[in-house]
Image (tube, rainbow over all chains, first blue to last red; front, side):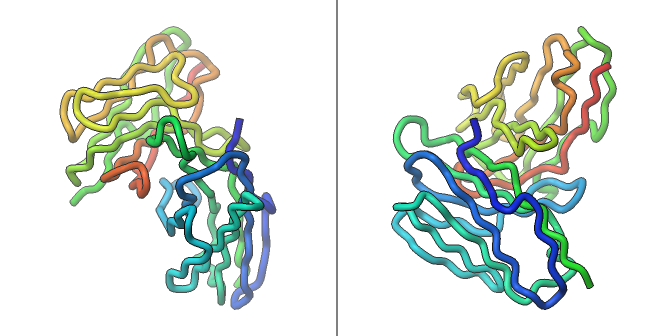
Length: 113
Length: 111
């Protein structure tokens, strides 16, 4: 079963607007990561947030993590048409084998020029 | 650096045929993994390796074999292809499992 679930499944916004997508997960984690996938391409790592962190920034990206709610959000500010892609969260569970990442089903973001 | 390379880019197989999907990386990464991506399912981990000679199963290992004889290469073998294995396959590598670099993918169609 999927550990992470992104919400919404699809999001369409205008260039310049902010985009927010959410990820919920089921078990305790060591860290949570966000990846981007352009159509027909491999995934690109965007940002990693550890379980003891609450917020991280990278350029126009802001990620928050609420371990009490088992949820994370990815905010892309001042979106551009080039941000059009699918965005996936991936979690590394705590305990047991620490070498596996579990991906969600993704959010398809469309940024209209 | 070429990063993570995968061959072939596209393959058509008949049910029952076997084949090997190749994956290579030139970043001296210890961690390598194979995922399959199906519509509406996200990525699912097939097998992974934490170093040469060490492999382990992921979420969906049945029907696939792997080996890791060198740091650079991590081939994925389909023993007897089935239509259910029609998918896009991604190989990834990293210094550890935290940040992974993905290859461009192999599209596999099993008839």
